[in-house]
Length: 135
Image (tube, rainbow, N blue to C red; front, side, top):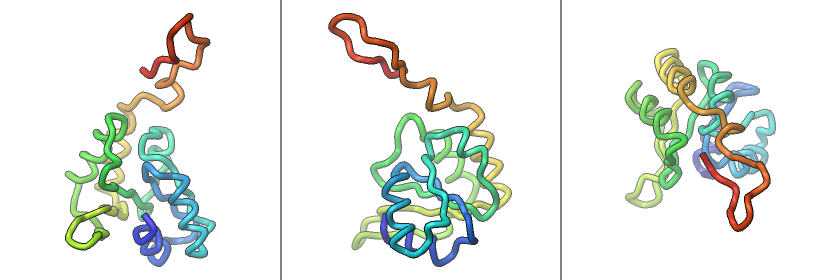
């Protein structure tokens, strides 16, 4: 994540948004890179994805594909080649996309079909002997 964010920090316009599944870690490294202006959001947050603009960034990190983000990341990968990739030795660890109109349209379309994060977790009090349900 560090290498991806440092490269994004070098390329990004002021106030750009960076979507990843490690929002807190991305924010930390953005600050370390001197880019506290970068807005870091979750790829699984449909409402945040619908606010993305051209030249914002999306990180598809190895090991961070979930049911909640699969549709968006698949649409993104089918919209065109990544801007750059980060490798650990011979193993790819992250693919980074700087959004153009085509990739932005693909993400926004996919995000519209996602269930909002606030509706996925049932925070009502558990029934006796059960845990909160994730929908």
